[in-house]
Image (cartoon, rainbow, N blue to C red):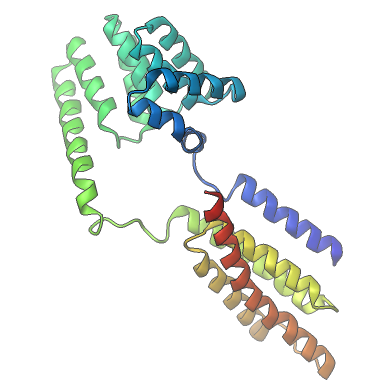
Length: 287
């Protein structure tokens, strides 16, 4: 039993570390680099450059840091250094649309239109067609490559996406974020598997602290993975425990064993909600 609980707890840690957070590498880097990004956007180029230069020394594989240091280079007119940073950033993560756009713009200015088109095409692909800028620059490049029909289509698409972006802040009620997204469904599958394991512990444990420890650990993982939707996963785990116990397990005949299993079951259900609440608070405090 002790080994089973230990394996389960380590599974929660591994899950939270590698699977619960479905953001891309670039998304995580953007969150970490907000101080420098705000410096850059406010026009404090020298301070921003120093910030990103320091971040690159500490995190040599952060492509977003290279992207923004390249943008700082461009602001001060050092195009060669900017191009070198962009190429380096692309080698660490070739899925960042803005890196391809910036490389493409430099190539476009050099009149290397075929190479520029390739970069803008990559930007369209990696942005999943949701960003106006890659379409805009690909449209301009198609004009240079004598592709007027395709160029106009790209430019029209850029205008349409730009209009959507302008209207988005005033249309938040009409287009809310979906509750049942891929992340929540992935976490729900993990919770179902954990609930079955916890049910086994509830039935087999001869003391209450093992199911309580496992319930608290798993619930804290729920709250940490889904700080705002964790309540739904806590309900899922509690309901799965109750239904699994009442419908699919044999009831003991010994009164002492009945009391023990009831303590295990209902205590685990209560701790599921408490642990989820605490995990959500910890995650928001760390954000």
